[in-house]
Length: 238
View (spheres, rainbow, N blue to C red):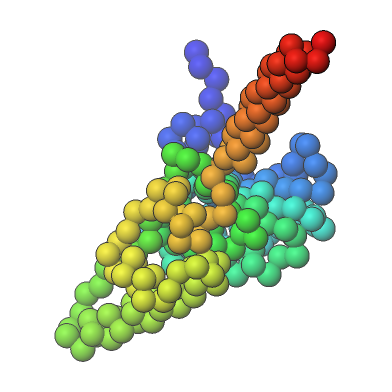
């Protein structure tokens, strides 16, 4: 019979996956994984308190446990979730003194893309994507209440827009408005183009290898040319 503990069951059911631990390779660094929806703490139907593993409160407690660190490696594969919870996570990370490197491993959609903007450096896999869109909600009520809710959503969208503008430095506000209102999916190259990511994972290594191959080829060509030149000179002077 298969031996399943609570952690294995949670992972198997894809119920949660948020993890933070000190890096094995660097004692002054920590690895954070946002591999699920961003959710706040709350109360269930029966009145029981529920602690979310991807809440801003959980992140704060984990960071406090780690103490002083100089490097945060933040891995993201999330479809998004609670706007205010994500904004609080973004703010915590921005204020943290460590250097923050964000890795977009799969998808950084909706509020998860805002969290990605907290990185001092954002590295995206060549197969990964980001998705940005306006804030949305489910609401019910009379016409006046729904109009008020729409105004709040507009303010929320305007607020989170600042995270993209702050990170990018490339995109105009007008273009960003177009991307957000159209609910835009961005591949790795587009994320680089708009300034939402700084480089594609593995790209610098490939460039270095290509440069090395190019240099070796040029060196060989130069050597071949030198040998031929000496042969010609030898025919005239030897």
